[in-house]
Image 1 (cartoon, rainbow, N blue to C red):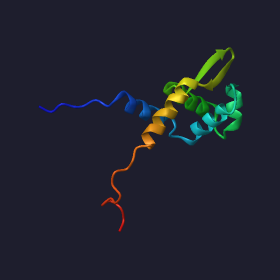
Image 2: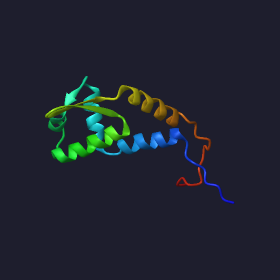
Image 3: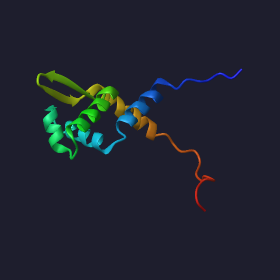
Image 4: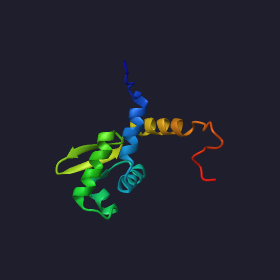
Length: 111
């Protein structure tokens, strides 16, 4: 009998955050938002060399991952960093990248 193991919740969350960070526009959006208390969609759009629809798609990815949050103030939307999830992402990535690499030499390395 072959039993499939599930991924840990932390591994799934790291992957979710990593996917959200996997585009330079999203990195710029996060850097912009991190430097401010909050801002509106138009402020974010003004910072990026891309169409409004594309900015909206990137904001949706970041919001779905939980890294940002938005509040509708018709007709505008106000965005800010989700501080709790930002801290959680920081902890997860720090823990992940603090793992010691066991092998000193890998047979995959070029000789």
